[in-house]
Structure formats: structure tokens, C-alpha cells
Image (cartoon, rainbow, N blue to C red):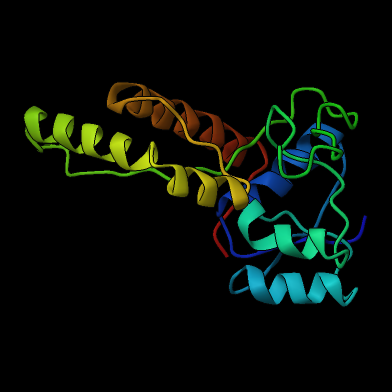
Length: 172
């Protein structure tokens, strides 16, 4: 199979390709780039046949008809691209990966400060203009709090660690 590109080794986009290969039972050669922009340029130009990328950087190229979105990697379709199936709907049941951003603080941060940061961040994320900007980039706001986020990070670490070991992914 032709090599997909990704914007760097061990990024979520690299692992998305590795998960695709493992789930689909195909071999892929990852082609690392120094960021999404050069990879998107090469994909649009046809120098690489496919790529995994985050919604914010690829969305406008898809909407402009310069890229064709084949599938969404999350469990649910994107409101920004409602006609694009999920990977599971496209024939890969069990395939799911969602990029995420989070706010982290040092482990020794006192609980009252963590609670205040959580409260203040939630207030910002409730502002209509902030919600609209995040949605316009294809993002979804999570209602999870610090404890849920901690558990999520632990489960993601276990999940991707298992894939790295199974696929024998090594730093190059």
C-alpha cells in the first residue's frame, strides 16, 4: 500500500496511521513531516496518497474541495462534516481515535487551585463565541473534570503503549 504521511513520529497522527494498519490488516510506511502544513501541501499536490490529520488544519481544505475526507476517526460523525462516515461506518469496526487538548498543572498543585482553574476554564468554555470558534474548527468541548481527565490520560497511555509495543514502533 502507498505510504501515508504524518506530521512527526509518535504524534497522535502517526499512531492513527499505525492503528489503521493494525485494524485493517495492511502494511503502511509512515512518512514523517515537520508539521501538518507541508504534509497537507504534498497530499493536495498528490505527492502522497493519503494522510491522517487533525480537523482544524484540514477542514478548510476539505470544504474548499482540495482534499477529500474519507472518514472521521472519532466515534461519532463531525457536525462540520456530517456526510463523512466514521472509520467504523466505513468498514473498520473498533477503530477510534480523537485528538484532544487539555490543561495540565504540576502534580503538587493544591486542590483548591485545581478546583478554581477548573471552574474558571469551564466559565470560559461556556462563552458562546468560544464555543463557536471551537466548533468551527471541528472541536468538541468535554464536560469532564480533572479526575475524569486524569483517568482518560491513564487509559490513553495504556492504549497507545500497547499499540506501540504490538506494532514494534521504534524511534528513528
